[in-house]
Amino acid sequence: MIFFYIYLLLVTLMSLIFKKKGILLNYSGDVHQSFSNKKNIPLAGGLFILIPIVFFFNDLLINCFIISIYLVGFFSDRKILVSPKNRFLIQCLLMLSFVAIFDVKINSSRIELFDIFLNNKFFAICFSAFCLLILINGSNFIDGLNGLLISSTIIILFMLTKLNLIDNLIISNQSINLIILILLLLLLLNIFNILMLGDSGAYLLGFFIGFIIISSHISNPDISPYFFISLIWYPCFENLFSILRKLNREFSPLKPDSKHLHQLVLFFFTKKFDLKLIFSNNLSSAIILFFNFLIIYISTLNPSSTIFQIKLIAVSIIFYNVSYMLLFKFYKSNLMSKK
Image (tube, rainbow, N blue to C red):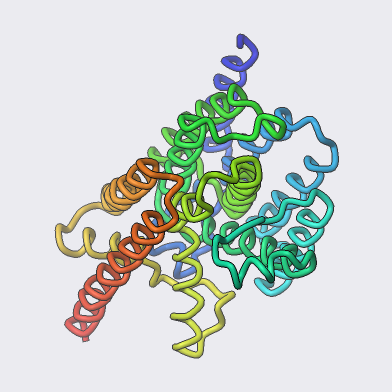
């Protein structure tokens, strides 16, 4: 444990050094980026998460995939891998290969007709890879506010360990607890704008959570698969909703914009209460997290019931859509008033 606490100290010191020396800075002036933060902050969070995750996994090939998905994000952060299409194609190749090699497939949907398709190996591989892609990119979407993705990850890992659903053949509960402690430190640094995750950290956390959840699903067949969907409904639905919203506007789903739910919440608090950007940022993140925590907590009350979980997901989606419509109306009215 002494080495772990030394690592936490090193993370803090290196974060401060990166901030002072201007290493791995993030700000490029993009509209979607300046919507929530206009400061140059090091994108070092992913690196500090990568090291312990690779350390805790003993499988060399798994670590190769973990490092690869991190590097896709890293090259995106460095503006080397600029094309969203190329990033997505590389992600597709990595996820299809990962699912096929390690047989990390979703086994059951508890819908008889769909389970017939899942019994087909090719379909199961493609569907599981698709789910991982949705989560990875959804995680990147919700990382637009300080602490939102990190806190969501902490909540999910905590609930899985509390219910003893972690597949210990993949990673131990003790390792998960240590990762949670590291994430708590990164959360504190993120809230105070000392570091950010960047695409590298968001992709990495999305992949890590997806792997853990599918592994938990496989090792706990008595738990409803919809319970695991309840845990990650927010980043996944954020991604799916964003794709449909952009297609409806004849806008490329792969290109970023500033009309995600968390950005509209931020806009509301900034304009309605005339708060500084960092205060609006942290407040918006806290409010979204509060409601997401309630949903995840409620889902743990009856994890084996498919009907219970489906109802909860449906209520969550309805609440999301109503909130989005109201916030978007406020957003449009403010733009019109400026004109």
